[in-house]
Image (tube, rainbow, N blue to C red):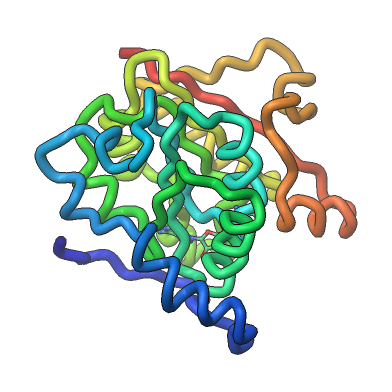
Length: 227
Ligand SMILES: C[S@@+](CC[C@H](N)C(=O)[O-])C[C@H]1O[C@@H](n2cnc3c(N)ncnc32)[C@H](O)[C@@H]1O
């Protein structure tokens, strides 16, 4: 796999606790997904117990949403991508605590993995609270752009969903403008309750709880792949 992308943001903060470090050393290599494994084949075969369909979470942070979804959807194979190793360690603890057998992890940038995923192989993508990069000169770092939308649309099955959450009004506006320009993903909202109220199958995340505590209002956007 060639990684020609530049990744901004942190990869590591405080040192891992000894138990977390052991999980990263011992369990992560068992669950780690190498993008090359995705070439020439459907991702379902990468799950020991098999999987009816595959969902992808990009930037899972501490993994609360991913572990919640994996526990409630045992027939789904989950691919989670997160460059921040402290977050990966938190998810590994949840995997052990809940005995989850349907998660594979990429501890890194999702973009090279997107390139390796077969077309229409994913039925749901979660992108929750992508880094907002508020300064205008950093907008080109924002995850949502025409290139990544092109890749997300290519890997999504027809009718597949892209779920995006953000607490930053400018990032919400940016996302809707990018989607309108892209044209091949439909925004399925019919009224404000669709973007103001989190549906029952959409749990909160650590980042969201902090945003709400600090007075910011989350927006929930669901886009559907047209063809
Ligand atoms: C603001 S945090 C949100 C974390 C989590 N989704 C939540 O809601 O708690 C954004 C996350 O995206 C991750 N991220 C940024 N760029 C990424 C990329 N290219 N591929 C995968 N993850 C990425 C960051 O490491 C960070 O953990």
